[in-house]
Image 1 (tube, helix red, strand yellow):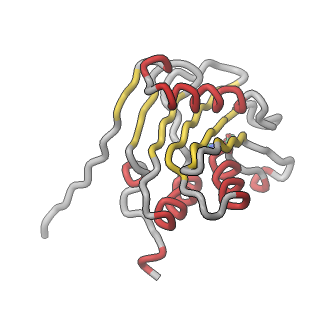
Image 2 (spheres, protein in one colour):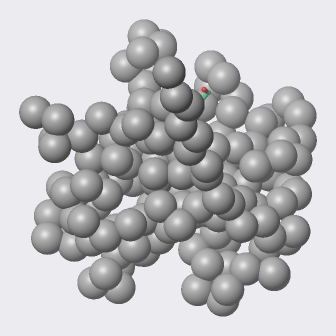
Length: 160
Ligand code: THU
């Protein structure tokens, strides 16, 4: 028997003004679109902003449904929109922020497992890593250089 270990690396920024300028803009757009979330059931609002290699910024917020599983997370709203409208474009950077209507989220809130798998599809397809920045409502912002840090052993087309 032998053991393997896998490490994930994240950069930590204390506040939005500490981010590179283009990411400050991206995160501010994520904050704005977060407020447009349709989240009457969870009262938990998530906003995502994507920067594409064609210069476009694509936004998404979570969209809930009375039949709960029919709703969709902000990250997938954004990446599926990008895939639908700009099928040739690569997603370079992704900013995510989440806030509750009932309490103040202060720790970085990462994308859920299903969103990670969906992001993995795009990262694999475009063969360019996606920088992912995520935060709560306040507090630190974590940055990953690639989806791979968030989803070790990811399942992709290479296994098929
Ligand atoms: N949500 C997202 O939009 N992204 C995530 O990565 C985690 C969860 C949404 C789904 C649901 O509308 C609400 O947050 C509570 O789970």
